Length: 231
Image (cartoon, rainbow, N blue to C red; front, side):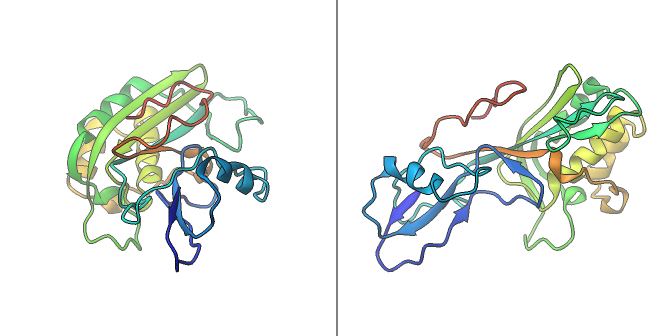
């Protein structure tokens, strides 16, 4: 995303932050440039300089008031869990291996449903956040299983610092029968951050997409497990 403005330094601003080890298939960023390169040539020009695990898929010119982060209407994350006693070496870098107990994805989905709407989710916010409050709107939730892979999808108007990894850590406890659904709900409704101890590791988390009005980009490349379902 390029805003053609003179006198600006070329600083890249992303739509959403990711911890070390977290992946992204639908990240959007903007940069202020003075280059005359047209939109359609930016992906090829940048991909020739980037490392092989980073690829620019498309570029658009937007107004000087547009911001990759602050203009976003929603963001969506997916967390992948590999649920089999035998490790899968090919999924090790992109999933959390849970092997002791078969996850009950229906119970996990039931625990997520009450989160829909505008809530204070301080129980799922790590220390060190600069936000003035912990309220956000959860717009969509879903839990799907494809064989041994369980995917947790959450779409929000904005995510708190560390929210998705703390949330999934609690959901896994629900899915393994260690935490009742009612206790899961009580923790976040009452803001019991001290009871939310386990955070999911970073490698299973993926930034799936971000939405703007009007829509600027089509969906990212196909995902191995199910459709993106964003929008």
